[in-house]
Image 1 (tube, rainbow, N blue to C red):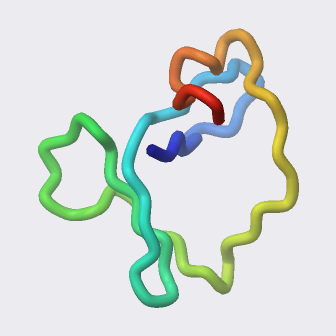
Image 2 (cartoon, rainbow, N blue to C red; image 1 turned 90 degrees about the vertical axis):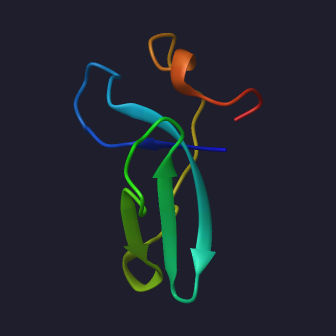
Length: 68
């Protein structure tokens, strides 16, 4: 499971649960509850870097997988 934040604002909202995997040079992410037949987001590795990790805030914990 992968929680992906689609909105970058100070409210802590915008997190969505999904499933992600690598396909070639891209990270492909699909929402858990979606009627879409293809991925919701495709992020190419060349533009993808995890710079830091942090603990979720109280308002973000509802959307995070256990142990994230």
